[in-house]
Length: 336
Image 1 (cartoon, rainbow, N blue to C red):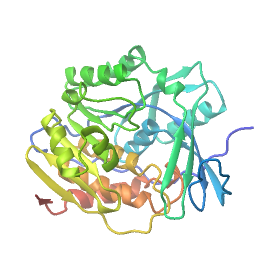
Image 2 (cartoon, rainbow, N blue to C red; image 1 turned 135 degrees about the horizontal axis):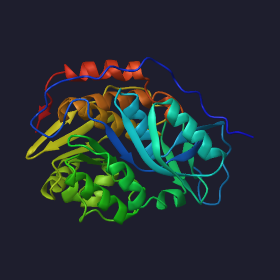
Image 3 (cartoon, one colour; image 1 turned 180 degrees about the vertical axis):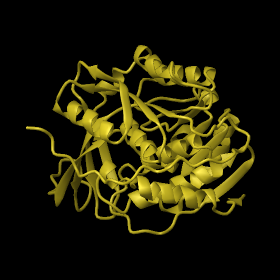
């Protein structure tokens, strides 16, 4: 039996925004190249996270397309830019469903390979407060190698955005970022999930996006501003530390700016970070500078947590279009 997925919001495609940048390599009408993973997400609504050896009864479940690579590709596509995804899925019903859904979203699928192992899956527990706990398989993601990655990297033009996460092998992640830099693409890295160190990788990263837990893990600093400063010192040009309900911090050189979020009632935080990354990358592809791109990404991620599910909770094209118009025209951020 075919997999039943959560319904997909529909809306008119957002028109690309055009604006001069802040002197970086961001160019209007560039495309976003995402090299990452795809998973089938099964989310269970639970009263609380289970303790070791305990069985907890769920109030309900949702089956949805997920995986950080696919999620970020969808969020970028809904932002109105051309998106190409490079990933691997199994030759199975889950893989077929993913191909169909992502194609409907306007994500380019020419570089999604058939994997000899089953499509990766994630089990997600979601509490009434909207917090989540996730366990994922990654055999298909581990099958992505530089031979496959080069098929999409060969299409990279100066000013395109290369967006990556932490699901792939260390050698592939570093190799892709090095090749992206060589081709004058803007390299954006979201190093989650953390499965290895990034010290050798940071010099090839233009923009790093990570949350408080990840920033402390990778830098040893519990202070987000200090953690961001550490990564700038390692050669990253722009660092964004997402702070959940508090918004985000943006570090550029010695400057640290606060990006507040509006207060909402969180239903499910699954995929919010991926919404942030996808909208952020697409905003830069459309010519926005890093500050308005960060503002728009915070607003889009905040909207996503008010809905259940993974991609089914993402803002629609029309919603993201309005968010980016407001972000482009918004006030300058407070500086530390």
